[in-house]
Amino acid sequence: MRLTTPDGEIFYQIDRIKNSQKTLVCLHGFGGDSSVWEFLKKTCKQKKLNLLTIDLPGHGYSFRLNK
Image (cartoon, rainbow, N blue to C red; front, side, top):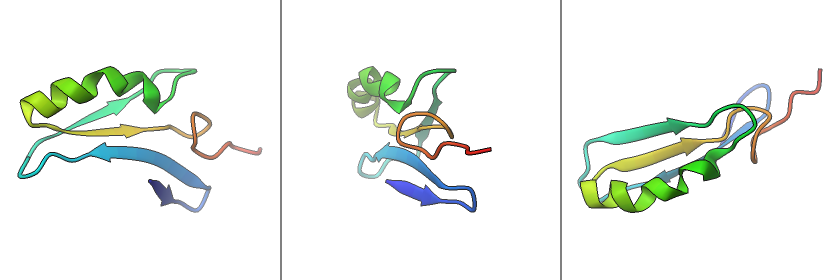
């Protein structure tokens, strides 16, 4: 999924668990992208947590700064 901002698009993924009221938000470190959190999907599903992962600007599928 993508969120459009004035600077460009931010890529994110959310794995929703039916009736879950809790969400774990994961941000990657320098040089990474949202795929580093793939290993958490199974655990979050077992714990009934939604999982939100984001590609920060300049990483993964998000926009690159052209300045």
